[in-house]
Image (cartoon, rainbow, N blue to C red; front, side, top):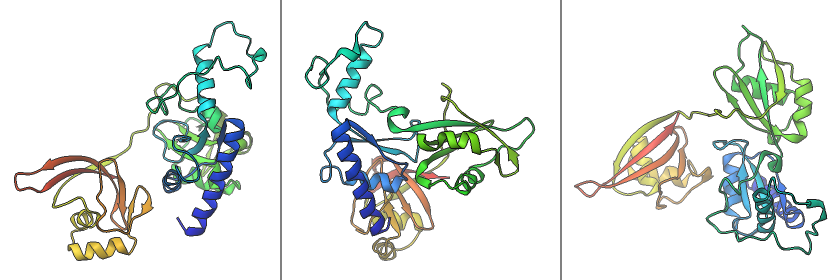
Length: 294
């Protein structure tokens, strides 16, 4: 991310946070992984820890919406869910004074299925794209190009999931009706678009190539040297030059120690997930397992 873009995103995040302090919850636009990682880095400075979560319409989404949600809002909503189906006159409750609904919210419950945000709260709509029998199902690039050709901002569009027999589009609710009425063709195929809930068996399979490395340390330059097949000094220069990214943000410290769960990329060599640290070999070296995105 460029410095100006980061500054602008920080300002927008502060606005979303301010709105959440007044309304209880506020959602932004779709962000890529680097932007999400940057907003996470601001927690504790611009806004408190645990107030920010991300949701993209389904659990494995890559492009996601930042949702700022106060503890008060979460506890109210949880109590409403607990009381669903009971005979309560919600309209008669004075939310400013009554505190009967308050329940403790712990770090263990934040982000669980019970407290995770919904599509409605994140302002996300899932669109099911169908093609006539015999027509070619459009690919990701075709769909994205068509959406941008309709004048949409990238921030209004989340993941585009192409399955064997269907395409699902995740978009902001502000553009959903427009797409239902305006999106009639993608590439060479006529399409029909409808707002639809995801099927229960909806799943996205990520493709990985597993790699095993044996190296002397978990430093960024050591990992880079092992993957690229170059000397440690060359790898160090690559990291300093900004060719290494950790969790989608530039990392220019060669001595930085990577850990399980880190996603990193080396320019020209791809993107990797640090999947597992298998510990030391008999010779005292470290064996790690990486998953390379393909």
